[in-house]
Image: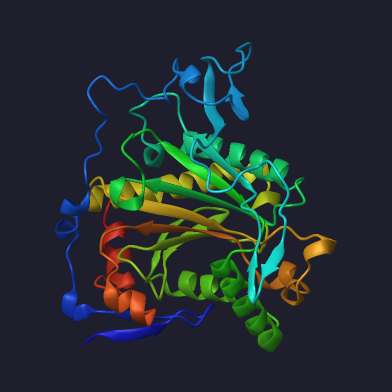
Length: 344
C-alpha cells in the first residue's frame, strides 16, 4: 500500500507510492543526450579561455597565467546571470508590494579542463571543486549585500544542464535568504526548542543505527536515502560532527566528503545509467548584525548543513504543483538496498 510520510524538518508530506513501484531500468530512458552543434567549440575546455569572461578565480598549476591553459578548476561569471554584481539593492515598495534591484552574484565553477571528465567518478576532482567553492563563498561573504550563497549542480538536460556537456556547477549569492532554507531553519529551531537537540543529528543517528537507508559512510560523513524522499533515489550527505556552516568546515575533511559523494554518484550511475540529477547545498546563511533573525539565536546548535542529491527520474505535474505533495514510486529503503548491492 502507498504511504504518506512526513519530512520531520519542514513538515512536508510525500506519497511513497508502492502501487507505482518502479525498477531502475524504467528510468534509463529519461536521460537525454546533450549535443553541441556541429563545429561548435566548448567554451569551458582548456585552451578556449578567450571564449568566456575573464576568470574570477582558478586553481592553477604552478607558473601558469590567468585566463590561459594550466588550470584545474576555473570560476567565471555567468554570461546570463540571474543576479548582477554591480549596483545597489534599492529596496522600496510599490503600494502593498515589495521589490528591490536584482543584485547579487552568479558564478560558474568549471570543474575540469577536460570536456569528457565525469565529476561524479573522480573523488580527487570533487575535492578540488569543494575547496574552490569554499574559497569563493568566503570571498562572497565579504559583500554585505549578499545574505546567502547557494551551491548547486545541474547534470543533464532534464535537470537544467544545458546543451554543453562539460562538468560544471554554480554559485549564486542572493540578497535575501532562501525560502526552502528558512523552512529548514524554522523547523530545526522548533525541534531544538522542544528537545534541546539538533533534529538532523537525531535523524542521522537513527538512520545509522537502523542501517536501512544508509548508502555510504566514512570517518566524517554519511550518505542516506531520505526517509521522506521526494524523488526516487534522493540522497542526503551530512557531516557526522554537528556543524551549521559548510563554509567553516575543516579543509582536512574535504577529501572525505569527495570520497562519499563520488561513492554515491558512482553507485547511482551503475544502477540508473547516465541519469540527470541536481545537487544542492543547504547551509546556514551569513550572520551579520544587520540581518539577524529570531531563529538565529540557536542556529549554531540546531541547524546542520548537508548536500542533497536529487535524481530527475520522474516528472512533477499538476497534482504536485497544486497540492505541494510529491509522489515517489521508489521507497527509500528499496533505493538504499539497490545501491548497496552495487560495488562502486
